[in-house]
Image (cartoon, rainbow, N blue to C red; front, side):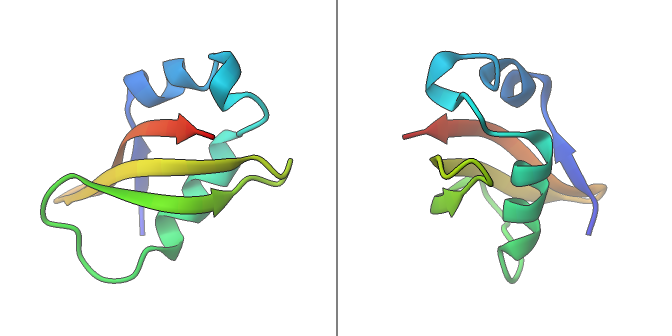
Length: 73
């Protein structure tokens, strides 16, 4: 499945709260979500390789899975 990360989500990765979360961490997390996501939904409890816990907000669009934002813990 193709994962599309919005510019907003990429910008949030520069914030301190999302420190040590990489694009690869986001792609892996988005691909682990089973089924179809028809509306923007928050998924909790993913682990980055660095050990940081984060949530993602994602939805499915015709082009793939759109990651709207990242929320670091």
